[in-house]
Length: 376
Image 1 (tube, rainbow, N blue to C red):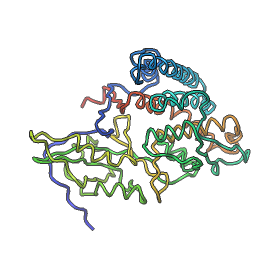
Image 2 (spheres, rainbow, N blue to C red):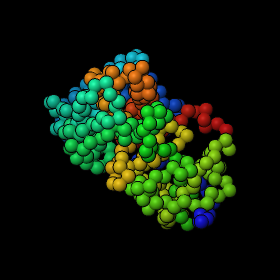
Image 3 (cartoon, helix red, strand yellow):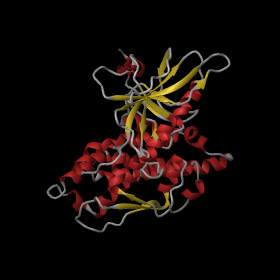
Image 4 (cartoon, helix red, strand yellow):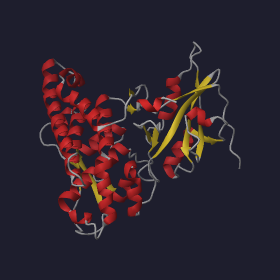
């Protein structure tokens, strides 16, 4: 059956996906550890940056600012130490960096919970020594992880929820090849391109996805509720800024449009919000090639958001537990695929996790575009 023709339009712009009403912060360089650490250090050392996050009197702000900056300093020290460790053993330091970054983030929204002893919010039973990790699960407990999950997704995460590792790791985009080598299939996050197009009366978003990239189940139903697949138009490469070297895409058009403002100007904010209505299954992407990430539900039968930022955090906790309690699973003679997988987790997730933290503390998505990519 042939696909419907798309609506005609006469102008367009490439539009990275972002939260409603909050424009991303743009950087004319690629994301790097020195750049991100320097900007995170501002939160730890400059009172006007850190203290502004807290309400109340100056004395109340200063009390929370004291806790905040020391969470940040601890996190930065652990992260810098982790970068000097060459393999998956660094995950222990990376996790304690992310734990302290998370405490700083949560201090701004639930300060009373960050006082005194604060638990991880995840647990792992390290039994089955020397076996494959395929049967392992994390259990959600009271503490940082479910609070962070609720803060970032808007959904509560029931205590006692099980997070099977073989489902969790494929939700980390940076280790897709390595998780496939271990034999863990399933739906994975996929990048997409996003543009806003306009005619004389309306604006609406278009999404360009890799062919057959939209999963079934609840993720597919949410996507289909807001977008429909249409025939590609002749100049689709120009609209999305795609090289002729790339192929194998499908085009999807928003089912509704945003009427222009009374002045006649396009209502780009409302058009952008049409896409953000799928926030449970999409998230911003920090690099220039993709404009957003389709992050499928953790389970296909029910909505369970699992954005890469939270999957990275949970996987790093799990990796730190293996480093402490099950180092035999990294044996290259017995489990070479697992050893390579967790080396990749340590290596590939470091910068994305820093971006996750920086975006959360800044309160908006961060977009890093190397200046040389803006020349044609």
